[in-house]
Length: 403
Image (cartoon, rainbow, N blue to C red):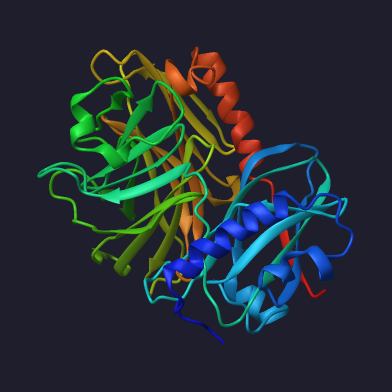
């Protein structure tokens, strides 16, 4: 059963504050029945187990919970408008900040997102409390944001974490570097006239920038960016606070195998430098559709490509007087078809199948400010990309269990 939001904002704010303060001032409790979330109005609960099977510590790992899976396995009446996740230690309930997203704008949430560090070879157990027929919304500190166009002729959308920002401009992706952690796009366009927050460090021009998509019709590459490219319909799905999410829907492209339609979800997560791209392809073709992200050929760039690790990285000069920047594409090695070289960009060619979501990541860092440690040199950037790929490609497992 799905529920729509119905309760007043006054109740929402009051309950949000109650959770934060009541759980903070009741230390050492031993009974959830007498001093746990039930006292705040929650009626039911189930467990969420997140398993990291690798020997790596997954710092600030983005974890996505599928709402349909929750309802199918443990909680048919799960209400995404009144829930809260907790980590329970020693009788204390520690609130875990999360975000429910409605991907198709039908007023029903599809995913719940959280960012959490997962210890090596470990299982993290959280408890999700909910009430079927009420509503509230927590207001935590935002570390991710997304918004639509802010100036005529400018980008159609932008999405950012507290460390880096991305712009969607006619299919190409630009990058904004930040001098210090924080969100900056709320203040645009006025904020563009100031330089205290940072710089536009990658202006893609007619190139793919940091991850603009191309599609292949047999040997012919069809850029989905730049002059003459099909114009995507761009929608802001979520403005944060954990994930800033934008959707780009491209019109059907004619190929020898028939029409191909591409939809891309572009995500920035709190405390991370990458943009996750989830691609959904619609086509009658039975064989994989070749598509993938391109990286601009930066001036004086040093490149690194590792098929086994699933990485393509570049380190070179950014826009204007920005100095040096790093760009990267990270992908599952099993999806790699080829690497395509063109005058303006190098493009990772991946295999996408209709009905199967293809996920890859693009990342960017600037030699100054919030990401300076990641982009201090070509060697440092390549090492950071390799480490990031190793963590992103870990098959983290999520299970839901009844109490």
